Image (cartoon, rainbow, N blue to C red; front, top):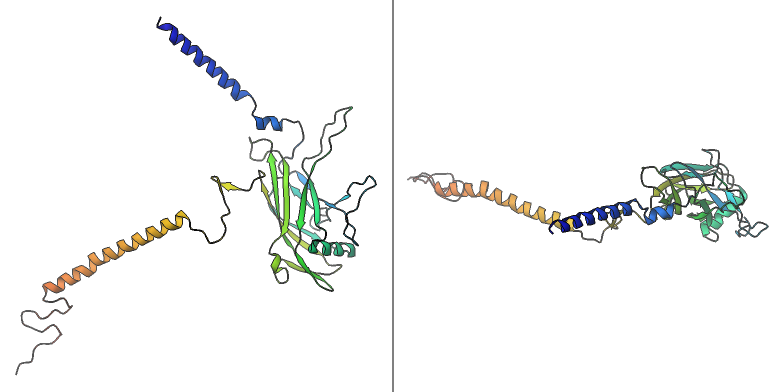
Length: 304
C-alpha cells in the first residue's frame, strides 16, 4: 500500500523529464523563423551599394521600359577601383574618393544638398541564391533603403560639402552559436556629421566641377534592429540636465570624508595645542607667564 505512491511519483517524474526533454529539443519560434532555407550573409561578405538613377536636369528618377526604377552602382572609389561596398559585420573607417566630379554629378549634388531629391540608395538584404529549383522561378531579391543625408552649402561658382559621414547598419542574425555568424540586413542610414561646420570644418571640401570628392565613412554595425542597450537601459543618456544616483552617492561620500578629515585634524592637532597652552599658563602660544617670569608677551616685567 505504501509502495504505490512512490512508484506513481517516480513514474510522474520520469514522464516529466521526457516532456521537458522533448520540449527542449523542439526548435524555438525564432529558430523556426530562420529555417527558411534562404541565403544569408556571412562575416565579411561584400555588400554592394546601388543608387537611384536621376536626371541631372530635373532630379527626377529615371524609369526602365517596364516602369521600374533604374538603379546604378555607387560611383567608383579611387582607393578600391570599384563602387562603394560594405563588408558584413565589419566596422571600419572607409575612404572613398570619387576621382572626378562631372558636370551632371555636380548638379545632382546640388539636388542632394538642397534635399530637393535625396541620394537614395539600397542594399540587398540577402545575397543571391546559389541553388535554383528546376521549374520554379527564382525568388526576387529583397532590398533595404539606404539614404545618404548629405550636408553642404551652395555658392554661385562652387559648393561646400561635408565629407565625413556615419553609416549605421542593422542586421538580424540567423544563428547565435559563433561570434561571426550569418545574418540578413534589416535597415540602414547614412548622414553627414557636423553639418553646421561644412564651411570651415576639418571634414569639409570646397568643390567645383572637375575636382575629386574625398569621402570618409565611419561604418558601424548593430546585431539587432534595436539600438544598443546595457542592462536594459538605453546607453545614450544625453548631456547634462540629469541627476543620477551615482552623482548623489559621490557627493555624499565627499561630504562625509570632508567632515572626517576636519574632525581628525581638530582632535589630533588643534585641540592638543590648546590643552598644552592652558597647562603652561594660558591659551596663547606664549602663555601668561611661567612661575612669575614673563607676562605672556615675550618680555619680563620692569623692575625699578
